Length: 477
Image (cartoon, rainbow, N blue to C red; front, top):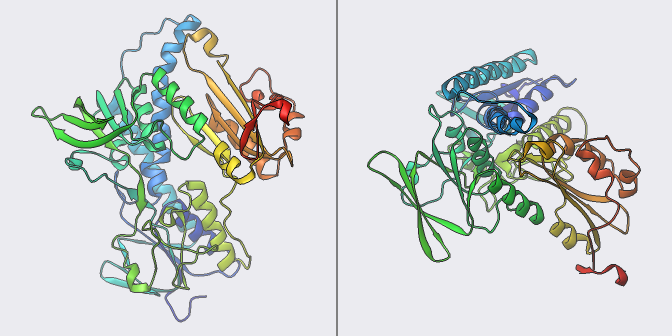
């Protein structure tokens, strides 16, 4: 193809969404000429694979696995194992993690090469609607796709320069003996739990009464309790005020709780996990007429098209739903629509996801509040229990499962799981929900015994019933 311009498509950003969109576009029968631009690889910035692969989901999950051995060693004692671990070699873990990240970076390079996508290394900025500048060279394309993701957002408080971000913490050379995490989103909660698994004294400082705003309130309260059981020091209703560097090189975090000033002293590291913002700085969007929304993210329509007709955007830069599989989905829809002759809009409903805390949480569909606001009439099924593995381990960890149903159609509106293997369980139930699963169909499914997952197919009696937005007793229904 090509013709008037050097390329049919230039993708700016080599993360999950950008790589998927570029290689899928290049594989279409129309055979567009495609190039992708990404920064050089380093442990904390740039590189093919992007945030998820290099300094997000993948290294986080590896460290989460490793941290769980710390819990498993303790639990094994309840099964008769005489366990006396000799300690942990953080340096070895970092070395192996870096090697794996480097390998994956190479894998993504091969993906582009094998799909005839030209890789241009460097920082990209838009000169106009059809021109991208990388270094001193300019490249032109009929269509441009923006996929530069998001970056950590820091609280504007004194001493913020003493904090580190999620980009840094998964590559720190020395494990902190004491870690203070500011924030209560999934990144903050995950990091506190991960480092606690390696025997770090972990503190979580957050403004709300419970962490994980946006998730189901009942699950938030439950997981807060479980994190506390696992030794995370929870500091709710706390507003960070200042980070001070001590004479010994460690840090003091100052926060305000109920009008009182409180200090956490002697922290080796302070992680600021207070949200992420679209990575738009230095892209030259103004030169191409690409508009931003009120949150500073690229504004797109239902086909991921920006205010500039030939420029599209997918992934976290659009701040629609900051999840890697969603970015992949948006990239696929873009390629199929623009180059595959199809009409595909990304769907952001019924998206299963997981939070890798201790214990982990898996969710899909609506929270109880969202369901009540939208449907007014709902049935809520819940079950809290101690999983079989902990009947002998002595651990206080418990599991919680919740299902939300529309009583008028019997359709399952939401499933929420807190407990071991929650991420693995929710994937299958997410597929069922995508197919329109009803409560009756779930009830008719034979359970796998003994397992935690079977709890979801044996919930026969509603814990509560909401009618017209209000909880009512059975006799009134």
